[in-house]
Image (cartoon, rainbow, N blue to C red; front, side):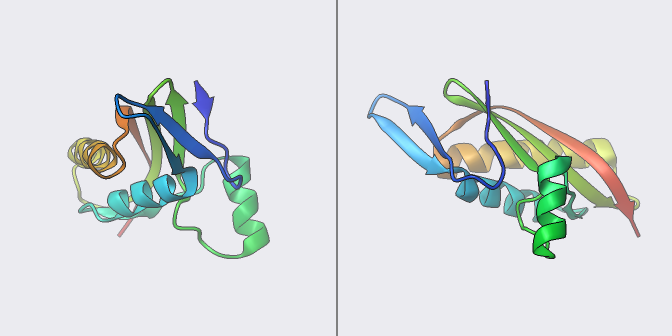
Length: 126
C-alpha cells in the first residue's frame, strides 16, 4: 500500500484493459474534498497530520484538500476524510452518505476503484 504524500506532485497510476491511466494526486484530493464538502451537514474539512498542519502555518491559508488522505493498494484506493459536521445531524447517516458519494464520484469521474472510504468526524459546530 502506498500513501500518496502531501505537497509533492504524484500521479496515481491505474492499469485497466485499455492501458495505464495517470491522474494527479492534487486533482484527486480536490475532487474528493469538494465532493465531501458538498454533502449535507458538512461544515468543513480538518487538517490531519504534521504535513497538513505545517502547510497551514507556513502558507497561512486553508487548502481545499486538507483532511483528505489517499492510500493506493494495487489499482484500488483507500480514502480517509477528516471533517467537521453541523450540530444536530445524525453522525452515522452523514458518514455513510459521504462515504457512498465520494466512492461513487471517484469511480465515475476518475475511473478508479475505491476499496473503502473512512470518515472521521473531528469537530462539531453550531
